Length: 138
Image (cartoon, rainbow, N blue to C red; front, top):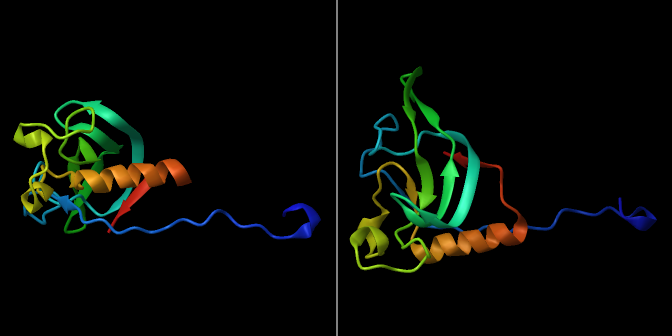
C-alpha cells in the first residue's frame, strides 16, 4: 500500500511480438542441432551484448532442457540461446554468420533466432522493465 492507504500496482509492461525462428525446418524437439526448442520453461542463465563465440553479439543463454518423446524423457538439448547473426560488437559483418540477409537467417541449429533490430529492441525493453528469470516456450 502506498502512503494514505492507496493501492499501488507494478509498472505496466508492453508486449511486442517478434518473428523468430528455431531449428532448420524440423519440428522434432528431440532433434539436437536442428529441431525446435522443447516446450517448457527455461531458466535465463545470462544475457550479454558482446558475446564472442560460435554465435556473437546480443545473446540470451537458456538452461538445458530434456525433450519429451511420446511422454518419455528424451534427448537433453544443450547450448540453447536466443540470438541473431552479428559481430561480437553487435554490428553487421561480412561473413554469413555475422550478417543478417533475410528470412533464411531465421533457421538455426535449434536456438531461437531474431533479426538484429528485434533482439536489440528486446534487450532495450528488458533493460527498462527488468530481466526475467525464466522464458516459456509453447
